[in-house]
Amino acid sequence: MNNSPVYEIVVFKANDGVTPEQVIAGAQSIQPFLDNYEGYISRQLIQADNNQWVDFVTWESIEQAHAAAEDIMKQPEAGQFMSVVDTNSINMMHGTTAFLTSLKQATE
Picture 1 (cartoon, rainbow, N blue to C red):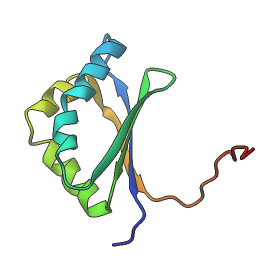
Picture 2 (cartoon, rainbow, N blue to C red; picture 1 turned 90 degrees about the vertical axis):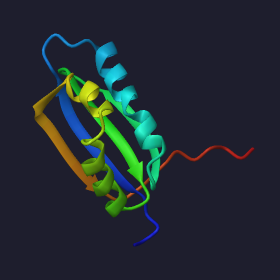
Picture 3 (spheres, rainbow, N blue to C red; picture 1 turned 180 degrees about the horizontal axis):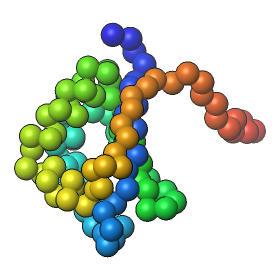
Picture 4 (cartoon, rainbow, N blue to C red; picture 1 turned 180 degrees about the vertical axis):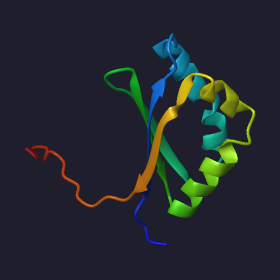
């Protein structure tokens, strides 16, 4: 295992008729599970175009990311989130940083 964080990127669409507020509430319903899962670092839920969403989760290792993805589906809280997600639209991937750049801030 290396020291690079692993990024879990889950792209999905909400079910027809589901509001952004319902997607956010569903995502928040599983947050306590993530907060207590070994290897969890951070999470962002991004609202994109065309009713698409990106759930961007950072993990310490790929093993922890895979374990959490499997374990979370056994949790009752997952039902609320999955009820708003078009399960046929889910695309999940994992990766590490290949290139990173940032803006330099003036030191003066």
